[in-house]
Length: 318
Ligand code: 8YV
Image 1 (spheres, rainbow, N blue to C red):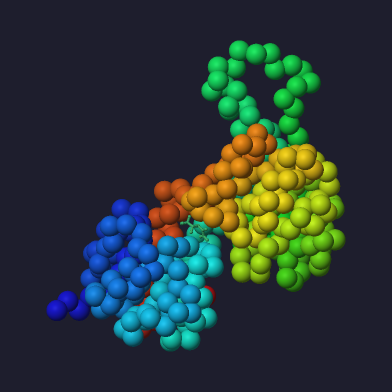
Image 2: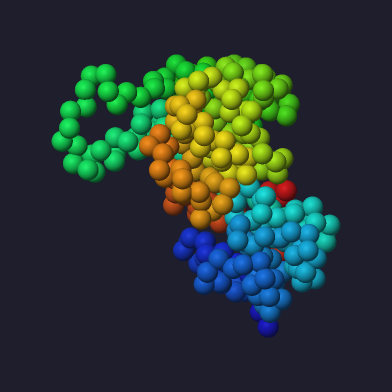
């Protein structure tokens, strides 16, 4: 029998990470992203001490109770872990890890891309070009909203929110933020703190979400109504934070100028009413999807597995 740690790779990861998993551990590599039941069954069959998972493995309290007794670590390949009840898993004596830091830049980059695309009508321009252009786009027609110099509100000033703020400063924006607690001055870098999100919203010409899900619907009809008319809304956090009916209404009525959305309440079968709105720029939950970052996320998950299997503390426990 091999002395190498027995690992279940329950998600398809990048080739470099898969190669390392095969080399460094006795790894059962799934040929697709396993469901919760498939992952638990495979972990039991392989006698796995480590499970490397993605969001398709939904470990609620009942599933956590069914994890085989030999599992020591559940290593997420994402920073968000709202697909699992981490406390229930940890209560079983199992270590849970996620992938902070390595996806910060890419997530903020994509959020800023959505911000620019929404303000500058990227979807409409691209659609027009693909139809052949061939009409006059007059001096006062097809006009967007100038992002430079605007006031950006950030909800959730963790690593990704702060990286978004850094990008906004490069565009001369005034940055406001709402967070559970105020940051020290060296992290705030001049961003203005609002203890209450409701108090901040009326000042936000652009609003971007950068907080985890789990606290219920944040952007309700009332919250959207508090934004000034003509505001732009960006979401790379989680769809569960948003009342999508309210968002669609606000986009249709013109209360919102535009939105840039990477995440949805239901994925991948998202509400396709969004696709009918010209003032929405859409991406399919890909904020971390660069070769570099997906490699780094999977490698960090494996670093956590290696540490725990060697009896060392996990690098990024939750
Ligand atoms: C996805 C994410 O997990 O890290 C997160 O929380 O939402 C993303 O990085 C990743 O796209 C794989 O589905």
